Image (cartoon, rainbow, N blue to C red; front, side, top):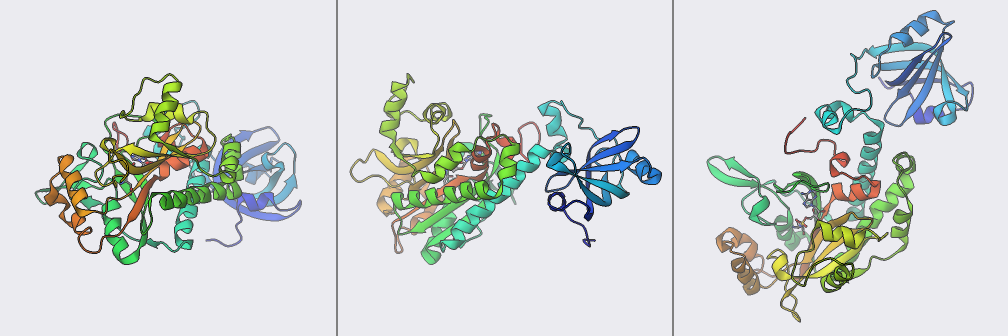
Length: 431
Ligand code: NSS
């Protein structure tokens, strides 16, 4: 199947007069009196293929190929400044492999309709560029863990108890008992650090979010890390390196895609050159008040406030040291200020907001038990989690990174549904 075929990208790098064999799908077509122009796309890009009407059989084939038909072409490379990429293929052989029915996407359709035909819309050039960037981000993130000596582990998705509060749990019937879809692998990762010390996982996480926003999914990709012997600041340093590794890979390897998407690359370049600042919750409240936001110490910093804090920034920064009542029970309470938890969020600039949530974990049995009770949770549900504080407890920290949110910021896309191939939406779990 593979023999002799090259990609559009390779073809555009070939010299005039070279013979090439290509295959892909009909992206655009124009039938003129003397020529048939077919713009063919493949995973790498597009190339213009030209058939002269003097080759009557070949031209007839090209002419009958409908939009999105799969094709094979053979021909010779010619420079032409009018062609996309500056080169085209003078076609000598043209085969239709799969003739397409009338393609239902013609341009100008509503977002709603495009979601109905998501399985076809994923062929669009915009979504293709985003998926390529997404794959590069994922590879960079994985490589960063591996090259720093972290172990990948495989936590479950079916779980018994909440990590991030009962309000956003999806429940499932597990042979007559109630189970839940995982919100976070954190507690399982905490178990694993007692043998492997530094562990990570990449899994779907599920949140039955009440509100519909541009940055919430019901099923999203969650990259989580957990490590023994690391305090909050050690973990923040690691997260900074991790996020920079993804930004660097995209700048190095996905230039054409960023340009296609019209992404301003300056904030990404600045991110690589800067160190991420730490802004405490106390400072953030003051900043918000100075900007005229009606907020006081103890109030939650939500999506709207994050937008105010990040919209004029060009480099990610950490928000830290939150009032403990705003944060999950597992965060370690600060010794000096018992009303504060050792948590950190990484805020993406340019209005994007939170992409990472992490903390140092409460490693004292009594304090953790107390926090579970304060949060009206049943200690029986967390017995195994409490056990970790009974058998060789260790200072440790961890975080969860929303892969979709990171890709959203790096690509500069304004809605999270466009950075994941199959977003689950409330109106439709489709396809
Ligand atoms: O709720 S988090 O802030 N934190 C946790 O789940 C911790 N238990 C993770 C850990 O320490 N191992 O979620 C972490 C990140 C958050 O910063 C977002 O980037 C992303 O997960 N996140 C989401 N992305 C998309 N859609 C939704 N609904 C969503 N919820 C969280």
